[in-house]
Amino acid sequence: MWKQFLSKLPRTKSTGAGRGDDGFDSGQCSANNGIQRATSVPSGGGGGRSASAIKRMSSAVFPSSVVAGIEPLVSFKDVPSSERQSLFVSKLGLCCAVFDFSDPSKSSAEKDIKRQALLDLIEFVDTNTGRFSEAVIAACARTLAVNLFRVFPPSYRSGSSSTSSASEGDEDEPTFDPAWCHLQLVYELLLKFVGSNALDAKVGKKYFDHSFIVRLLNLLDSEDPRERDALKTILHRIYGKFMVHRPFIRKAVSNIFYHFVFETQRHNGIAELLEVFGSVISGFALPLKEEHKNFLWKVLIPLHKPKSVGVYLQQLTYCVTQFLEKDPKLAGSIILGILRYWPVTNSQKEVMFLSEIEEILEATSMVEFQKCMVPLFRRIAHCINSSHFQVAERALFMWNNDHIISLIAQNRQAIMPIIVPALEHNSQTHWNQAVLNLTANVMKMFSDVDDELCLECLTKYKEDEENQASLEEKRRLTWARLESAAALQPVTGHTAVLVGCLPSANLIATLI
Image: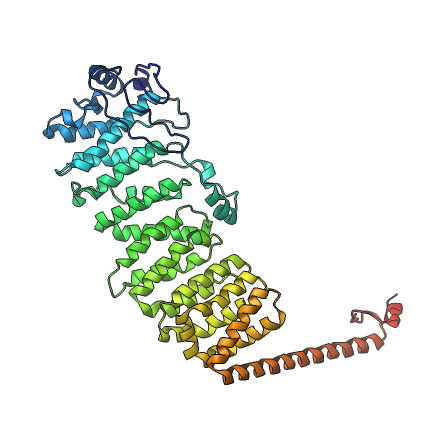
Protein backbone atom coordinates (compact mmCIF):
# COMPACT_ATOMS: atom_id res chain seq x y z
CA MET A 1 0.00 0.00 0.00
CA TRP A 2 2.85 2.40 0.82
CA LYS A 3 4.35 1.88 -2.60
CA GLN A 4 1.08 3.04 -4.15
CA PHE A 5 1.11 6.16 -2.00
CA LEU A 6 4.78 6.85 -2.62
CA SER A 7 4.36 6.38 -6.37
CA LYS A 8 2.06 9.38 -6.41
CA LEU A 9 4.83 11.62 -5.11
CA PRO A 10 5.88 14.10 -7.85
CA ARG A 11 9.52 13.82 -8.84
CA THR A 12 11.70 16.67 -10.12
CA LYS A 13 15.32 16.72 -11.03
CA SER A 14 17.57 18.19 -8.37
CA THR A 15 19.31 21.46 -9.15
CA GLY A 16 22.47 20.60 -7.28
CA ALA A 17 24.44 17.57 -6.25
CA GLY A 18 22.86 15.93 -3.23
CA ARG A 19 20.20 18.71 -2.81
CA GLY A 20 16.52 18.63 -3.75
CA ASP A 21 14.40 21.47 -5.04
CA ASP A 22 12.73 21.88 -1.66
CA GLY A 23 15.84 23.48 -0.22
CA PHE A 24 17.28 20.85 2.21
CA ASP A 25 19.93 18.18 1.91
CA SER A 26 18.96 14.83 0.55
CA GLY A 27 20.29 13.12 3.66
CA GLN A 28 22.25 10.45 1.80
CA CYS A 29 25.30 8.99 3.51
CA SER A 30 28.46 10.64 2.30
CA ALA A 31 31.73 8.86 1.75
CA ASN A 32 32.93 9.71 5.25
CA ASN A 33 29.62 8.66 6.80
CA GLY A 34 28.90 12.21 7.94
CA ILE A 35 25.42 13.65 8.34
CA GLN A 36 24.54 17.26 7.67
CA ARG A 37 21.56 18.57 9.59
CA ALA A 38 18.80 19.71 7.25
CA THR A 39 17.44 23.22 7.30
CA SER A 40 13.73 23.84 7.79
CA VAL A 41 11.46 23.52 4.80
CA PRO A 42 10.91 26.91 3.15
CA SER A 43 7.41 28.26 3.44
CA GLY A 44 7.53 30.57 0.46
CA GLY A 45 9.09 30.83 -2.95
CA GLY A 46 12.74 31.38 -3.70
CA GLY A 47 13.31 28.43 -5.97
CA GLY A 48 11.73 25.77 -3.71
CA ARG A 49 8.31 24.14 -3.68
CA SER A 50 5.60 26.20 -2.05
CA ALA A 51 4.08 25.16 1.27
CA SER A 52 0.81 24.26 -0.45
CA ALA A 53 2.67 22.00 -2.86
CA ILE A 54 4.34 20.24 0.05
CA LYS A 55 0.99 19.83 1.80
CA ARG A 56 -0.60 18.34 -1.32
CA MET A 57 2.35 16.01 -1.71
CA SER A 58 2.17 14.81 1.91
CA SER A 59 -1.55 14.15 1.60
CA ALA A 60 -0.91 12.15 -1.55
CA VAL A 61 1.79 10.07 0.10
CA PHE A 62 0.16 9.42 3.46
CA PRO A 63 -3.45 8.40 4.00
CA SER A 64 -5.83 10.54 6.00
CA SER A 65 -5.86 8.00 8.82
CA VAL A 66 -2.17 8.66 9.37
CA VAL A 67 -2.29 12.41 8.89
CA ALA A 68 -5.27 12.64 11.25
CA GLY A 69 -6.35 16.04 9.97
CA ILE A 70 -2.93 17.67 10.53
CA GLU A 71 -0.32 18.00 7.81
CA PRO A 72 2.82 16.16 8.96
CA LEU A 73 5.18 18.60 7.20
CA VAL A 74 3.87 21.65 8.99
CA SER A 75 6.37 23.13 11.41
CA PHE A 76 5.66 22.95 15.12
CA LYS A 77 5.97 26.73 15.22
CA ASP A 78 3.03 27.08 12.84
CA VAL A 79 0.44 25.29 15.01
CA PRO A 80 -1.00 26.22 18.39
CA SER A 81 0.64 24.60 21.42
CA SER A 82 -2.54 22.63 22.09
CA GLU A 83 -2.18 20.83 18.74
CA ARG A 84 1.56 20.16 18.82
CA GLN A 85 1.30 16.73 20.38
CA SER A 86 -1.22 15.78 17.69
CA LEU A 87 1.22 17.05 15.08
CA PHE A 88 3.92 15.01 16.83
CA VAL A 89 1.81 11.86 16.44
CA SER A 90 1.16 12.73 12.79
CA LYS A 91 4.88 13.13 12.10
CA LEU A 92 5.56 9.84 13.86
CA GLY A 93 3.06 8.15 11.55
CA LEU A 94 4.86 9.67 8.56
CA CYS A 95 8.16 8.23 9.81
CA CYS A 96 6.77 4.68 9.88
CA ALA A 97 7.60 4.37 6.18
CA VAL A 98 10.81 2.31 5.79
CA PHE A 99 13.15 2.79 2.82
CA ASP A 100 16.00 0.88 1.22
CA PHE A 101 19.26 2.76 1.82
CA SER A 102 21.46 0.35 -0.11
CA ASP A 103 20.65 2.36 -3.26
CA PRO A 104 21.29 6.10 -2.59
CA SER A 105 19.33 7.18 -5.66
CA LYS A 106 16.18 5.27 -4.74
CA SER A 107 13.29 7.23 -3.19
CA SER A 108 15.57 10.18 -2.44
CA ALA A 109 12.74 12.71 -2.17
CA GLU A 110 10.77 10.53 0.22
CA LYS A 111 13.88 10.01 2.34
CA ASP A 112 14.35 13.79 2.48
CA ILE A 113 10.84 14.26 3.79
CA LYS A 114 11.24 11.56 6.43
CA ARG A 115 14.63 12.91 7.47
CA GLN A 116 13.22 16.41 7.96
CA ALA A 117 10.33 14.95 9.96
CA LEU A 118 12.78 13.12 12.23
CA LEU A 119 14.72 16.33 12.78
CA ASP A 120 11.50 18.13 13.69
CA LEU A 121 10.58 15.36 16.13
CA ILE A 122 13.99 15.51 17.82
CA GLU A 123 13.77 19.27 18.17
CA PHE A 124 10.27 19.05 19.64
CA VAL A 125 11.30 16.43 22.22
CA ASP A 126 14.29 18.56 23.12
CA THR A 127 12.24 21.71 23.73
CA ASN A 128 8.91 20.31 24.97
CA THR A 129 7.99 21.20 28.54
CA GLY A 130 4.59 19.52 28.96
CA ARG A 131 3.91 15.87 29.73
CA PHE A 132 3.66 13.44 26.80
CA SER A 133 0.23 11.89 26.48
CA GLU A 134 -0.16 8.12 26.35
CA ALA A 135 -1.07 8.34 22.66
CA VAL A 136 2.22 10.12 21.97
CA ILE A 137 4.21 7.51 23.91
CA ALA A 138 2.47 4.62 22.13
CA ALA A 139 3.00 6.20 18.70
CA CYS A 140 6.66 6.91 19.43
CA ALA A 141 7.33 3.35 20.63
CA ARG A 142 5.69 1.98 17.48
CA THR A 143 7.66 4.26 15.15
CA LEU A 144 10.94 3.41 16.88
CA ALA A 145 10.20 -0.31 16.65
CA VAL A 146 9.35 -0.08 12.93
CA ASN A 147 12.57 1.76 12.11
CA LEU A 148 15.07 0.02 14.39
CA PHE A 149 14.10 -3.60 14.88
CA ARG A 150 15.31 -5.71 12.00
CA VAL A 151 17.05 -8.99 11.27
CA PHE A 152 20.68 -8.59 10.29
CA PRO A 153 21.85 -10.00 6.96
CA PRO A 154 23.31 -13.53 7.06
CA SER A 155 26.86 -12.18 6.84
CA TYR A 156 26.35 -10.59 10.25
CA ARG A 157 25.66 -13.95 11.83
CA SER A 158 27.98 -16.06 9.70
CA GLY A 159 30.03 -18.56 11.63
CA SER A 160 32.44 -19.15 8.77
CA SER A 161 35.10 -16.95 10.34
CA SER A 162 36.78 -18.16 13.47
CA THR A 163 36.59 -16.31 16.77
CA SER A 164 40.19 -15.22 16.46
CA SER A 165 39.63 -13.71 13.05
CA ALA A 166 36.51 -12.03 14.36
CA SER A 167 38.50 -10.49 17.19
CA GLU A 168 41.35 -9.35 14.96
CA GLY A 169 40.17 -8.75 11.43
CA ASP A 170 36.70 -7.40 12.14
CA GLU A 171 38.05 -4.91 14.65
CA ASP A 172 40.48 -3.58 12.06
CA GLU A 173 37.86 -3.37 9.31
CA PRO A 174 34.43 -2.72 10.84
CA THR A 175 31.31 -2.99 8.73
CA PHE A 176 29.29 0.21 8.32
CA ASP A 177 25.54 0.13 7.76
CA PRO A 178 24.58 2.20 4.68
CA ALA A 179 21.41 3.30 6.49
CA TRP A 180 23.30 4.82 9.44
CA CYS A 181 22.65 8.41 8.33
CA HIS A 182 18.97 7.59 8.85
CA LEU A 183 19.33 5.27 11.86
CA GLN A 184 21.36 7.86 13.74
CA LEU A 185 18.40 10.22 13.77
CA VAL A 186 16.08 7.46 14.98
CA TYR A 187 18.49 6.54 17.79
CA GLU A 188 18.82 10.21 18.71
CA LEU A 189 15.03 10.47 18.91
CA LEU A 190 14.89 7.39 21.15
CA LEU A 191 17.64 8.70 23.40
CA LYS A 192 16.06 12.11 23.84
CA PHE A 193 12.55 10.70 24.26
CA VAL A 194 13.54 8.23 26.97
CA GLY A 195 15.65 10.83 28.73
CA SER A 196 13.01 13.55 28.56
CA ASN A 197 11.36 14.73 31.76
CA ALA A 198 8.12 14.90 29.78
CA LEU A 199 8.01 11.08 29.64
CA ASP A 200 6.18 9.58 32.61
CA ALA A 201 8.01 6.36 33.50
CA LYS A 202 4.83 4.81 34.89
CA VAL A 203 3.12 5.19 31.51
CA GLY A 204 6.21 4.60 29.39
CA LYS A 205 6.99 1.23 30.96
CA LYS A 206 3.87 -0.20 29.27
CA TYR A 207 5.25 0.57 25.81
CA PHE A 208 8.97 0.31 26.43
CA ASP A 209 8.33 -3.14 27.83
CA HIS A 210 10.26 -6.40 28.08
CA SER A 211 9.69 -7.24 24.43
CA PHE A 212 10.99 -3.84 23.34
CA ILE A 213 14.08 -4.20 25.56
CA VAL A 214 14.91 -7.71 24.29
CA ARG A 215 14.68 -6.60 20.67
CA LEU A 216 16.82 -3.58 21.48
CA LEU A 217 19.46 -5.81 23.09
CA ASN A 218 19.48 -8.03 20.00
CA LEU A 219 20.58 -5.01 17.95
CA LEU A 220 23.86 -4.95 19.91
CA ASP A 221 25.05 -7.76 17.67
CA SER A 222 25.33 -5.20 14.87
CA GLU A 223 28.71 -5.05 13.17
CA ASP A 224 28.51 -1.26 12.89
CA PRO A 225 30.42 0.18 15.89
CA ARG A 226 28.47 3.44 15.63
CA GLU A 227 25.19 1.65 16.16
CA ARG A 228 26.55 -0.33 19.12
CA ASP A 229 27.83 2.87 20.70
CA ALA A 230 24.41 4.51 20.35
CA LEU A 231 22.68 1.44 21.80
CA LYS A 232 25.09 1.42 24.74
CA THR A 233 24.06 4.94 25.69
CA ILE A 234 20.36 4.23 25.19
CA LEU A 235 20.46 1.03 27.23
CA HIS A 236 22.06 2.90 30.10
CA ARG A 237 19.37 5.58 29.86
CA ILE A 238 16.55 3.00 29.84
CA TYR A 239 18.09 1.23 32.84
CA GLY A 240 18.11 4.51 34.74
CA LYS A 241 14.63 5.61 33.65
CA PHE A 242 12.58 2.47 34.22
CA MET A 243 13.53 1.05 37.61
CA VAL A 244 10.85 -1.63 37.32
CA HIS A 245 12.68 -3.12 34.31
CA ARG A 246 16.11 -3.31 35.96
CA PRO A 247 15.94 -6.95 37.16
CA PHE A 248 14.70 -8.03 33.73
CA ILE A 249 17.49 -6.12 31.94
CA ARG A 250 20.12 -7.75 34.16
CA LYS A 251 18.63 -11.19 33.46
CA ALA A 252 18.37 -10.59 29.71
CA VAL A 253 21.97 -9.38 29.50
CA SER A 254 23.13 -12.38 31.55
CA ASN A 255 21.40 -14.68 29.05
CA ILE A 256 23.31 -12.98 26.21
CA PHE A 257 26.56 -13.60 28.08
CA TYR A 258 25.65 -17.26 28.75
CA HIS A 259 24.84 -17.81 25.09
CA PHE A 260 28.13 -16.21 24.10
CA VAL A 261 30.37 -18.06 26.57
CA PHE A 262 28.89 -21.54 26.50
CA GLU A 263 27.43 -21.82 22.99
CA THR A 264 28.49 -19.51 20.16
CA GLN A 265 31.49 -17.46 21.39
CA ARG A 266 30.37 -15.02 18.71
CA HIS A 267 28.80 -11.65 19.54
CA ASN A 268 29.75 -8.13 18.52
CA GLY A 269 28.39 -6.21 21.49
CA ILE A 270 30.02 -7.85 24.52
CA ALA A 271 32.34 -4.89 25.17
CA GLU A 272 29.45 -2.42 25.05
CA LEU A 273 27.30 -4.52 27.39
CA LEU A 274 30.16 -4.77 29.88
CA GLU A 275 30.72 -1.04 29.66
CA VAL A 276 27.10 -0.43 30.60
CA PHE A 277 27.31 -2.89 33.46
CA GLY A 278 30.48 -1.26 34.76
CA SER A 279 28.41 1.75 35.75
CA VAL A 280 25.52 -0.45 36.89
CA ILE A 281 27.79 -2.37 39.26
CA SER A 282 29.13 0.86 40.72
CA GLY A 283 25.55 1.67 41.76
CA PHE A 284 24.92 -1.61 43.61
CA ALA A 285 23.93 -1.13 47.22
CA LEU A 286 25.83 -2.71 50.09
CA PRO A 287 25.83 -5.41 51.24
CA LEU A 288 25.81 -7.01 47.79
CA LYS A 289 22.77 -9.12 46.99
CA GLU A 290 23.20 -12.77 46.19
CA GLU A 291 21.96 -12.04 42.66
CA HIS A 292 24.82 -9.62 42.10
CA LYS A 293 27.43 -12.07 43.44
CA ASN A 294 26.03 -14.76 41.15
CA PHE A 295 26.50 -12.38 38.24
CA LEU A 296 30.17 -12.13 39.20
CA TRP A 297 30.72 -15.89 39.59
CA LYS A 298 28.51 -17.16 36.76
CA VAL A 299 28.96 -14.40 34.16
CA LEU A 300 32.04 -12.22 34.63
CA ILE A 301 34.50 -14.95 35.63
CA PRO A 302 33.46 -17.37 32.82
CA LEU A 303 33.81 -14.49 30.33
CA HIS A 304 37.57 -15.09 30.64
CA LYS A 305 37.11 -18.36 28.73
CA PRO A 306 36.48 -17.30 25.06
CA LYS A 307 39.42 -16.83 22.72
CA SER A 308 38.21 -13.35 21.84
CA VAL A 309 38.52 -12.11 25.43
CA GLY A 310 41.05 -9.51 24.28
CA VAL A 311 38.28 -7.57 22.52
CA TYR A 312 36.48 -6.82 25.79
CA LEU A 313 39.09 -7.51 28.50
CA GLN A 314 39.43 -3.84 29.44
CA GLN A 315 35.70 -3.54 30.15
CA LEU A 316 35.66 -6.94 31.87
CA THR A 317 38.52 -5.97 34.16
CA TYR A 318 36.74 -2.75 35.04
CA CYS A 319 33.59 -4.67 36.04
CA VAL A 320 35.64 -7.06 38.20
CA THR A 321 37.47 -4.21 39.95
CA GLN A 322 34.13 -2.49 40.57
CA PHE A 323 33.03 -5.57 42.51
CA LEU A 324 36.28 -5.41 44.47
CA GLU A 325 35.65 -1.80 45.39
CA LYS A 326 32.21 -2.80 46.63
CA ASP A 327 33.45 -5.81 48.58
CA PRO A 328 37.24 -6.28 48.98
CA LYS A 329 36.63 -9.71 50.53
CA LEU A 330 35.89 -11.06 47.03
CA ALA A 331 39.51 -10.65 45.87
CA GLY A 332 40.80 -14.11 46.78
CA SER A 333 37.85 -15.89 45.20
CA ILE A 334 38.10 -13.76 42.05
CA ILE A 335 41.77 -14.62 41.56
CA LEU A 336 41.11 -18.34 42.09
CA GLY A 337 38.25 -18.11 39.59
CA ILE A 338 40.49 -16.52 36.95
CA LEU A 339 43.13 -19.21 37.54
CA ARG A 340 40.53 -21.86 36.60
CA TYR A 341 40.28 -20.28 33.13
CA TRP A 342 43.99 -19.64 32.70
CA PRO A 343 45.05 -20.22 29.06
CA VAL A 344 47.40 -23.11 28.37
CA THR A 345 48.32 -22.68 24.70
CA ASN A 346 47.49 -19.02 24.04
CA SER A 347 50.44 -16.81 24.96
CA GLN A 348 48.64 -13.59 24.06
CA LYS A 349 45.87 -14.38 26.52
CA GLU A 350 48.44 -15.21 29.20
CA VAL A 351 49.94 -11.73 28.86
CA MET A 352 46.48 -10.17 29.21
CA PHE A 353 45.62 -12.33 32.22
CA LEU A 354 48.85 -11.31 33.95
CA SER A 355 47.95 -7.65 33.43
CA GLU A 356 44.50 -8.22 34.91
CA ILE A 357 45.91 -10.15 37.87
CA GLU A 358 48.28 -7.27 38.63
CA GLU A 359 45.39 -4.79 38.57
CA ILE A 360 43.37 -6.99 40.93
CA LEU A 361 46.32 -7.48 43.30
CA GLU A 362 46.64 -3.71 43.65
CA ALA A 363 43.21 -3.72 45.34
CA THR A 364 43.80 -6.92 47.35
CA SER A 365 44.24 -6.92 51.11
CA MET A 366 46.73 -9.10 52.97
CA VAL A 367 44.08 -11.49 54.27
CA GLU A 368 42.62 -12.11 50.80
CA PHE A 369 46.08 -12.39 49.27
CA GLN A 370 47.02 -15.19 51.64
CA LYS A 371 43.99 -17.20 50.51
CA CYS A 372 45.23 -17.45 46.93
CA MET A 373 48.97 -16.73 46.98
CA VAL A 374 50.22 -20.32 46.67
CA PRO A 375 48.27 -21.37 43.54
CA LEU A 376 48.70 -17.87 42.10
CA PHE A 377 52.49 -17.84 42.37
CA ARG A 378 52.75 -21.40 41.11
CA ARG A 379 51.08 -20.10 37.96
CA ILE A 380 53.32 -17.03 37.88
CA ALA A 381 56.39 -19.27 38.26
CA HIS A 382 55.18 -21.28 35.28
CA CYS A 383 54.82 -18.03 33.31
CA ILE A 384 58.32 -16.94 34.31
CA ASN A 385 59.69 -20.14 32.77
CA SER A 386 57.64 -19.70 29.58
CA SER A 387 59.68 -19.93 26.38
CA HIS A 388 57.54 -17.11 25.00
CA PHE A 389 59.55 -14.06 26.03
CA GLN A 390 56.53 -11.74 26.30
CA VAL A 391 54.84 -14.01 28.84
CA ALA A 392 58.02 -14.35 30.92
CA GLU A 393 58.70 -10.63 30.66
CA ARG A 394 55.16 -9.65 31.73
CA ALA A 395 55.30 -12.00 34.72
CA LEU A 396 58.61 -10.50 35.86
CA PHE A 397 57.25 -6.95 35.43
CA MET A 398 54.96 -7.61 38.41
CA TRP A 399 57.94 -6.96 40.66
CA ASN A 400 57.83 -3.32 39.54
CA ASN A 401 54.61 -2.85 41.54
CA ASP A 402 55.31 -1.61 45.07
CA HIS A 403 52.09 -3.01 46.55
CA ILE A 404 52.77 -6.48 45.13
CA ILE A 405 56.36 -6.35 46.38
CA SER A 406 55.03 -5.52 49.84
CA LEU A 407 52.62 -8.46 49.76
CA ILE A 408 55.39 -10.81 48.61
CA ALA A 409 57.87 -9.57 51.21
CA GLN A 410 55.43 -10.17 54.07
CA ASN A 411 54.70 -13.69 52.80
CA ARG A 412 58.17 -14.57 51.54
CA GLN A 413 58.33 -17.83 53.52
CA ALA A 414 55.60 -19.26 51.24
CA ILE A 415 56.39 -17.44 47.98
CA MET A 416 60.17 -17.52 47.66
CA PRO A 417 60.40 -21.36 47.65
CA ILE A 418 58.07 -21.25 44.63
CA ILE A 419 59.59 -18.35 42.68
CA VAL A 420 63.35 -18.67 43.38
CA PRO A 421 63.67 -22.08 41.65
CA ALA A 422 61.87 -20.67 38.61
CA LEU A 423 64.27 -17.70 38.55
CA GLU A 424 67.31 -19.94 38.83
CA HIS A 425 66.01 -22.19 36.05
CA ASN A 426 65.49 -19.09 33.89
CA SER A 427 69.00 -17.83 34.49
CA GLN A 428 70.40 -21.13 33.25
CA THR A 429 68.16 -21.97 30.31
CA HIS A 430 66.19 -18.97 28.94
CA TRP A 431 67.17 -17.71 25.50
CA ASN A 432 66.02 -14.07 25.73
CA GLN A 433 68.47 -11.51 27.09
CA ALA A 434 65.78 -9.12 28.33
CA VAL A 435 64.19 -11.93 30.33
CA LEU A 436 67.61 -12.88 31.74
CA ASN A 437 68.20 -9.28 32.88
CA LEU A 438 64.79 -9.07 34.55
CA THR A 439 65.40 -12.46 36.20
CA ALA A 440 68.67 -11.23 37.67
CA ASN A 441 66.97 -8.07 38.98
CA VAL A 442 64.18 -10.02 40.71
CA MET A 443 66.69 -12.46 42.17
CA LYS A 444 68.67 -9.52 43.57
CA MET A 445 65.48 -8.12 45.12
CA PHE A 446 64.82 -11.43 46.86
CA SER A 447 68.41 -11.53 48.06
CA ASP A 448 68.08 -8.02 49.51
CA VAL A 449 64.82 -8.88 51.27
CA ASP A 450 66.03 -12.13 52.86
CA ASP A 451 69.44 -13.34 51.74
CA GLU A 452 69.41 -16.35 54.05
CA LEU A 453 66.08 -17.63 52.78
CA CYS A 454 67.13 -16.97 49.19
CA LEU A 455 70.31 -19.06 49.64
CA GLU A 456 68.29 -21.78 51.32
CA CYS A 457 65.89 -21.89 48.36
CA LEU A 458 68.80 -22.02 45.90
CA THR A 459 70.42 -24.87 47.84
CA LYS A 460 67.13 -26.75 47.91
CA TYR A 461 66.72 -26.17 44.15
CA LYS A 462 70.20 -27.56 43.42
CA GLU A 463 69.55 -30.59 45.62
CA ASP A 464 66.28 -31.23 43.84
CA GLU A 465 68.00 -30.93 40.47
CA GLU A 466 70.68 -33.39 41.53
CA ASN A 467 68.08 -35.81 42.88
CA GLN A 468 66.11 -35.50 39.66
CA ALA A 469 69.21 -36.16 37.57
CA SER A 470 70.10 -39.16 39.76
CA LEU A 471 66.56 -40.50 39.44
CA GLU A 472 66.64 -40.16 35.67
CA GLU A 473 70.00 -41.94 35.52
CA LYS A 474 68.67 -44.81 37.63
CA ARG A 475 65.63 -45.05 35.37
CA ARG A 476 67.87 -45.14 32.29
CA LEU A 477 70.08 -47.88 33.76
CA THR A 478 67.04 -49.93 34.78
CA TRP A 479 65.68 -49.87 31.24
CA ALA A 480 69.10 -50.71 29.84
CA ARG A 481 69.31 -53.83 32.04
CA LEU A 482 65.81 -54.87 31.01
CA GLU A 483 66.72 -54.52 27.34
CA SER A 484 69.88 -56.55 27.81
CA ALA A 485 68.03 -59.29 29.66
CA ALA A 486 65.34 -59.41 27.02
CA ALA A 487 67.91 -59.61 24.26
CA LEU A 488 69.46 -62.75 25.78
CA GLN A 489 66.17 -64.64 26.00
CA PRO A 490 65.35 -66.96 23.03
CA VAL A 491 62.20 -66.11 21.11
CA THR A 492 59.78 -69.05 20.94
CA GLY A 493 56.18 -69.12 19.86
CA HIS A 494 54.28 -66.03 20.86
CA THR A 495 56.77 -64.80 23.44
CA ALA A 496 56.73 -61.02 23.80
CA VAL A 497 59.93 -59.30 22.70
CA LEU A 498 61.26 -56.05 24.20
CA VAL A 499 62.93 -54.11 21.40
CA GLY A 500 65.36 -51.42 22.50
CA CYS A 501 66.56 -48.38 20.58
CA LEU A 502 69.42 -50.43 19.05
CA PRO A 503 68.50 -54.14 19.04
CA SER A 504 71.40 -56.56 19.12
CA ALA A 505 72.50 -58.58 16.10
CA ASN A 506 71.49 -61.84 17.78
CA LEU A 507 67.98 -60.53 18.39
CA ILE A 508 67.64 -59.40 14.78
CA ALA A 509 68.84 -62.78 13.56
CA THR A 510 66.39 -64.53 15.83
CA LEU A 511 63.49 -62.42 14.62
CA ILE A 512 64.40 -63.10 10.98
